[in-house]
Image (cartoon, rainbow, N blue to C red):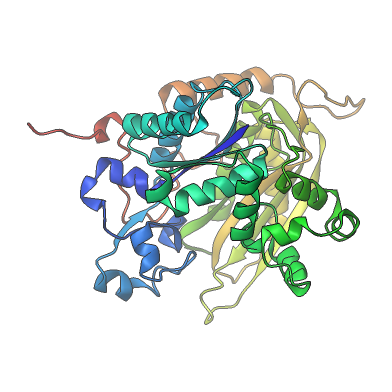
Length: 419
């Protein structure tokens, strides 16, 4: 059996753990630079606040309904997620962290266990130890576990946030209840195609001929159909190295000078390089992009990107920044107010599988240097050691006017208990 454990309204729940007065009140979390809504409590959803709502357009609604608005605090959310996942790992050694607030668990050899009781134990343990409410869905396959989790979350009072699909009757009933657009793995295009064929539920999808599904939705769609039929075709996945690493940011204010954007690109490149080294990888391509502020219709607009192949695989900040600056100087144009830039490294390969070249190779002295830089930054704080073309006194800072404390990751911001 598989289980999908999902943290309920995770970002909002993290805030409520340390600010209990938020319980029962509408809470929304804003994206980087306080741009738009990326998470909502159930109370906020009931007010009709949509996902992705621009914060400035809904400001009056927030004020009229006393909505509690917070900037996204990823340091807090990441740490709370780690705590939840570590607790889940004590219930089974087979675990796949699917996202910051979801994990698949595999229960092999649990045939004699009462999964309803076991799920309640998981739910109570996580909530007691972290304060984060969770829903647990058990089923013979990962896709069905997703369906079971939705039922557990939808009918909390009846299920106590735990639901088990352990019979054919339950499977069919659950699939008839699940709308086709809510099925894990079926996107907008497939939804429209299926609805045009009068397929509106997951159960109707399972009644389609295998040949049609294979032709119209490829082998991925056929695997999903088998999963919903109760045949397990998807196992837990091991963590994989990223195929592409990006660091992109909006600026605090518009920039017009090349040297200012060059400093930002150097900082973004350093971040990408550090992530490459952390996963023991090299890259073979660098992409840099810049763009103006598309919300300012009164200003001229411009966006451009450029991809450059490195002459050799590398994860050296010095070498990658050399290529990134070439890209920037090529695409930069005077006369525009730039609001965003980014660096993306691609063509990623393991650093123990390097293709050697007779003519150009990465400077061997860079590796021990990068290793020392990474260790110092880890010991003394992020970005304590910088490179010459990075501003020594400047830290990139998002617009976070409603940022809560990092209660679990900063010693000077831990919660204070008054007795």
